[in-house]
Image (tube, rainbow, N blue to C red):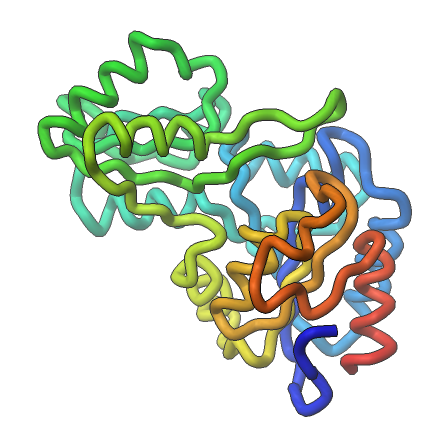
Length: 262
């Protein structure tokens, strides 16, 4: 244990989704029951995710079909954060996202694009499309990265995330992307602001040591790393300070919260 939590008052638990509660369409063993136990505690739960592979409604349906009792208003996604930023900047984005995620950008003008929004879009990561994004950015269009994850977990193993493609655009155009998802501090603070909670009153559970745990702890929260999903041995050493706690899985993390923090 790196940080002491004994004098904290815990009001909220932020939970990552992919790799923490499920991998593709397979739940983490015991996760549904653990979530039910956590719901009986006097804490607010929010599910925070960087996923750009599907819109929020599709994501919610997947989770409900897997047996997780989750409401749409409990999910805070990096797609939502990206759309909010596009609206604030009043730009017309080239949307380099998976087709199934386009629904979360309804109402956003995309003609004659003057910005690039890039997420995980395997079907669109080809030379022609990336070159179009490159030319826009070279002409001064801001690059808005929904997140810069290095990789994520699929049923058949680890898969390349959007981070490599974002970094490629940055390198080629000698520019820096605006990142809106985890591990950005603004992402965590916005999720907490929506429930009226301070960082020191919250804890994050996730399988990504840098984006979930490191991002949360840099925002003033506690972070629990779970050894499921994209976790690889030695991940605990990739951030300083290290995770507040490392647990085998989401159910064990819930046990710790219920037994030691409340």
